[in-house]
Image 1 (cartoon, rainbow, N blue to C red):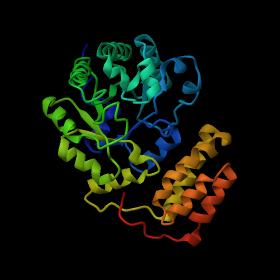
Image 2 (cartoon, one colour):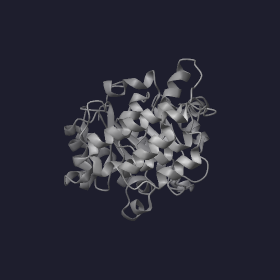
Image 3 (tube, rainbow, N blue to C red):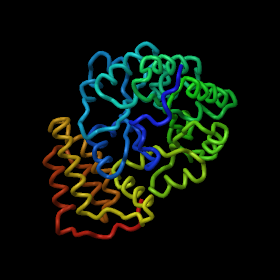
Length: 341
């Protein structure tokens, strides 16, 4: 199959801003993605969308209507059957997604039992069948990308399986691959193996690889690029409750010092995401979503422990807004927040 041109418009961002917000299960809904964009993220990926639920018109489809501000965006699909994965890719294209991303990385145990996500790396032929079906379904209408882990485990067989799948990604004409340098069995435990990324990029020069793993500061984005040779970086857990990681990355690109957000700036961002949640999800679901956002963002507040506990105790929208007024009001001031994350 003929490869998509090297720089189709939806991914033209990667030359000047070689970083983006990864798909984050339970977090990277449209409000989070829009907030990330307002803080400098040039591109975002949805959380994993299960193919058969998407096709049945369930929650996955209803919640994936795109806001005009939410572009360019990749719809990330996950599943077991090549046919339903291909149909799910077509469904997202019809909804206006700019890129289709195939998830071969999710380490969640329930995925292992039915063998999807990262667990497909233990069955390379099944993974390749899915990659081929999605690529053929999308054709040249949009870029197609993939998220991988460096293997199922640390065995020699797993290493070989990864490279079989990776070679198929290249040969099928995928636009780029994002590689998380932990194994599926590791999940998120232990250090990510950056030397694996360095080896991968050395052996596959000319094909864009984006790195993922242990990116919690803006500086670590550029350190990964320098140490591994990746084309760019996927920012995952480091973006939860911290959209300023993208602002800081842009500041570093411009040769400036990375500035930490003040309390007032945090307040404005929390309220902006709250408003987006109400508009896009409705008031009933907003409290639950914003409770976990507040808990995560509390780490930036000078009164971190107290603010975290206050958000943890929230049970509805009114209580959440009361926390904002108590800890993010004018009386709190713009206290210094220490070194940038």
